[in-house]
Length: 549
Image (tube, rainbow, N blue to C red):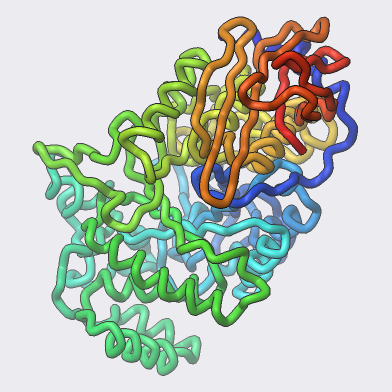
C-alpha cells in the first residue's frame, strides 16, 4: 500500500456517510491498546490568562521559548467538553507541572524559560504558570470521571539550569561536569546532558542534607516543618539512606498519593541509574494503592501503577535489550517499566501497512510478549517526525492508530498543526500553540480531525486493535484481522484499507465473524450481515473498520 490510499477524496467518501460523532465506546482497558494523548500543558489551551507570567517571568524571549499561557485548567476544559473522549483517548500524558526555575537562560538566541516542565526548581509544588494544586486535582478527577487515565511526566535526571536567580544545588546532590559523550554506561549516566544542566547523583548512596535554597524557599512559604516531617517519616518507614535519589523518589511518589496519577512517563531514562527507576516504581505503586483505597469511587479499576520509559533511540526491533554503549545492554523492563517508547515508528511507517503491522505484531507476540511499546509519529523533542509539514495527516493517523501496540498522539497530530516554524530553531519548532482556530474554521482541518476521531473511537472500543494478533486476510484490496483472547475478553476485528470508495465491495471475514452475524463499519456507521464468509456494506467507503457493536 502507498499514501495514495489516504488521499483526501477517498477519505471524504467514508466521512460523508457518518453522522455526528458520539463519545467513544470503551472496551476493557489495556495499556497495550491505550491511546495516550501528550498534552503539552503550556501550549495546549489557555483557560486562565491571569496566571501567564508569575515569578517575574516575561513574555519576551527566543521564539517559542517563553511561556505561552497554556494551563491545567485548559486541559480540564477540553476533558469536560468531550474533546478527548470523541478522539478515543483513554490516557492523557501531561508535561511536568512542578515549579520551574524562575529565571531565564540565554543561549545566544534569546531568553529561554522552563515552559516545558523539565527544568525543576522545586519538585514539591505546582508551577504557578500552569495553575494551582486545586486545578491539578480538578484535572485528574475530571479525567477519571470521563474514564481517562492520567500520566505524570517525571524527571529524575537533572535540576533546571543555573540562572541569576536560580542557584546550583550542592555538589553532593549534583555534578556539573562532564558533558555526556555516550561512549559507554558511565559517559551516559554519570554526566550532564548539556552544559549547565546539573545532573543528579542518582548513583550515590551518600546521605545529603536538603539544599539551602530549598530550605529557604520552604521557610518563606511557611511549610518547612511539614515538608521535613514528611521526609523524616518517609526515611523512617523505608529505611532508605538520605541519598539524592530517595528524596526524588519520595517527592515524585507524593504526586501519586496526593492527586491519583495512574502512571508515570519517565524522562531521560538511560541517563539515570537503572535501580532508581525500580525503586521509584515500588514507592509509586505503594502510593497508588493508598490513593485507590482512599478514593474507591474515583479509581478506574484495579490496574497496577504504570510506567513507560523514554529510553532515547530505543526501537521495537531491539526487543527487551537496549545497547547503552561499551558492550553493555540493559533490560529496562526489569527496572520497573511496563512499556518503552518506540522511537523507530516514525521511520518504520515509511513501509507499507502490511510490512509495518505484521512485523510489529510478530515482535509483540514473540520476543516482547508480556511487554509493551508506545508508538508515535511526532513528539515534543524528536526533530525527525514522520510528517513535519503535515502533508500526509490521513496516512499518519491510519498507520499510528491501527499499528499493534499502544499509540501516542502528540497534541496537534489530529489537527495537522505544523511542526515547522522557521523562526524557532531546534525543538522549539515542534511546540507551537495548538491550532484551535483552524479546527473551528478550516474545513480541511475538520476532515482530518474526523478521520482521527473515527480511528480513535474504533481503537478504544476494541482491545484487539492494539493488543491483538495481526494476520493479513487479503493482499488486494488490503484486508487484515486482529484477534484478542484472554480468560476475560474475546475481541475480533477486520480492517480493509485502500478501497476505491466508488462502489461497495465484498470483504472476506470468514473465520472471524459467522454467517448471519450483524457487524458494523465503525468508520461510516453502516451495518451489514455476514453471508458466505463475506460482508458487503450498502454504501462505498475507502476504509472499513469492521467489528461487532
